[in-house]
Length: 200
Image (cartoon, rainbow, N blue to C red; front, side, top):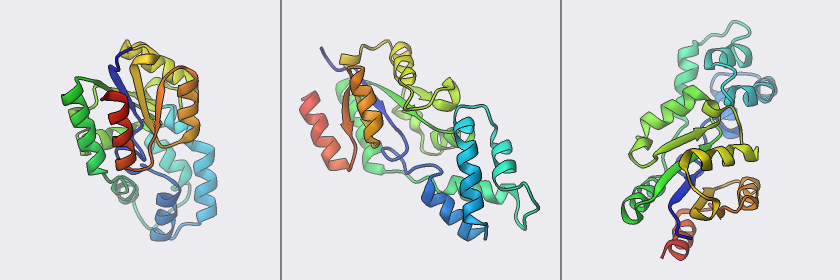
């Protein structure tokens, strides 16, 4: 069956991760926060935050501003958002795939709403990606296989028509169990070579 859709993860594939372990560690150092306290609060909150059931304001209040700080929420947000960086070669590859092969591109990603919207706008992801099946919008997170099923339903694509590019092996495995072809993204060169094999 012909490939008609590419499903992309965003963090770790098209962009750096939005608010990962390393970014939180940097924030703790920069703002002189207790690293263990920040990490503990984050792990209690992040799943609820990523499925859109906790606002950015609520996350910040509970994870950082539960006591008086010598910096503002705006300064902390600016730092958080500034941690997002593009992978230019991968963004260019996505645009080429769309144009050359007339493919539909779908993001399937775990991300909190405000951070997700910032990344979409900052890096103009709508130029290449047609649909965003983001955890904050659909109230499901990877590795729940229902997020992949929902993505297929919304995209109106059969599993055999999809290639999924993702940097987390477990998420690739779950997609493959549903019949989706997976590319475990490690670097631009290997992913491009694998796409050439699958698309011709």
